[in-house]
Length: 101
Image 1 (cartoon, rainbow, N blue to C red):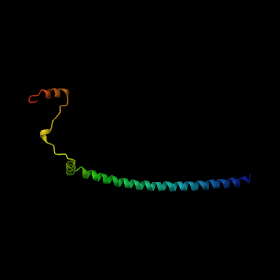
Image 2: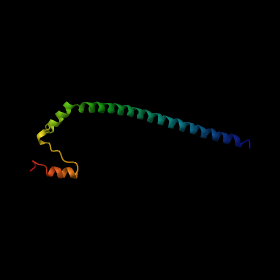
Image 3: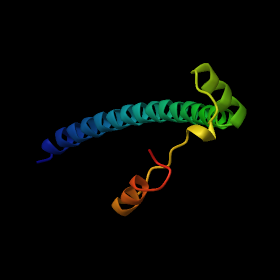
Image 4: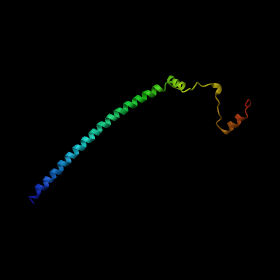
């Protein structure tokens, strides 16, 4: 029995040492992954701020109007506006209204 105890304790010591090395390696991997994730989060936050700024600039009326002109759009002409009826009763009234052709 006395001869087995040192062997068992030696094996137990080796297993504990391997477990310690493995856990330290895993902790370093996780720390490196955490740093990468934090860097990516900062990058995404900066990009989000830039996009919010771009959206604020792009939603200004002068910018929207300039973009519409580049697309060949023009201002609304009140004479060309047609308001469509919303229900069947309104449709019948609009069809038989005086002055309609």
